[in-house]
View 1 (tube, rainbow, N blue to C red):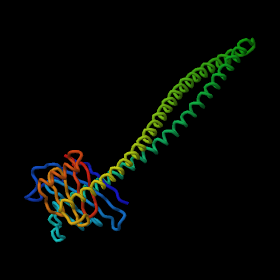
View 2 (view 1 turned 90 degrees about the horizontal axis):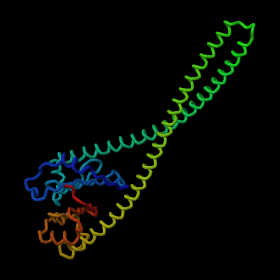
View 3 (view 1 turned 180 degrees about the horizontal axis):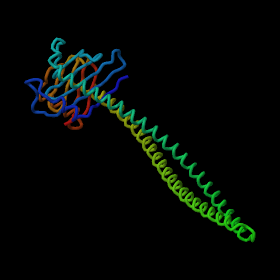
View 4 (view 1 turned 120 degrees about the horizontal axis):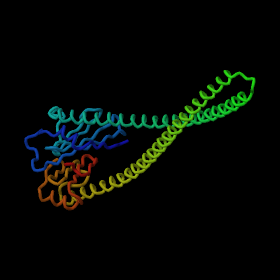
Length: 304
């Protein structure tokens, strides 16, 4: 399976923007970093297109450089070590982004589990509030019965006054306890309402997450359509290259770089007139670039 990783443009580029060659293009300060990972082959291969002061097309296999082009010119394997610093920085940025993606997925799982625990706790709190309310009603009924009994005792002439006083005191204590229970029941009810409201908010968040997933799916479909359009445009560019006599046929074009400032075909820089002609014919928006290398294409807008 092939996937594309688009790194945070400015952060990644800030760590990589330094001078590597003395003949860097000074008139164009636009920079970008694009990384494709292809896991359909073994070992997996990583394709890196990076522009700062120069254009870098790098292929990694098993974490090692297997191919490198600088400004459209192939670098011999025995000179890869000259670019160890820029390659190391690219690899470090890739590892940081992969680690962040793992942390984000783990946090999403924890959030989902917490929402489930909150929902279960809300149910328990509602049940406890119901039990407390029932107990308060029983206590109030018992207090009423005790009061009636005290009145009957007071009406009896031969009953002990001290016992009646004790019973009245007990009634008062029961009443106070009932009031406390009633207050606690009210507090429990308020807490249950709060829990219910929190559960509603959790449900709304889940619905928003589901809507976001739908939007992400739609964006993936649009990206697929855009990729097909990019491939079609590159085929038109290759046909035009052959038409202009820059290559005998399309199969003989192994690499091509075209943006707002330069035009390379098979590592050879083309004239400014041809660069302008191709740019005006194939670029519908400013700031776009085309990178083609051995059948692999990167088309997109360069980041400032």
